[in-house]
Image (cartoon, rainbow, N blue to C red; front, side, top):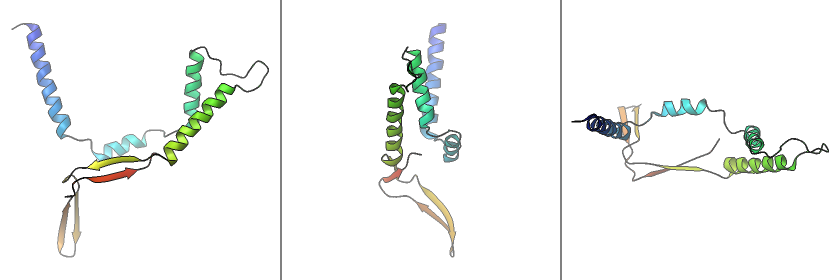
Length: 130
């Protein structure tokens, strides 16, 4: 058996392990929440600045015009970014589905512990973009 065959078999075994692990192990909600909390959120100013830097790198000037008047390209970029973010925040929604049996609630009632398992075919979820 050559080195290439050994390497291919090791890579195949690792790929098979990875497929099984990522299929069966979902990211816990607390980790998703922590990751979301570390993101800065939407910023029209930051996005406009990033686009203007990219325009400058392409050779398109974004500073004031030679006569001192404001650059209309920057105003247009800012208007576009403002509208995109407004639409994301006010018009957009996020949709998802929860498969049956994936939502399990545990609680207590007067008669003792209560376990509830989701048995609905697919529960639809909606949310907002923040």
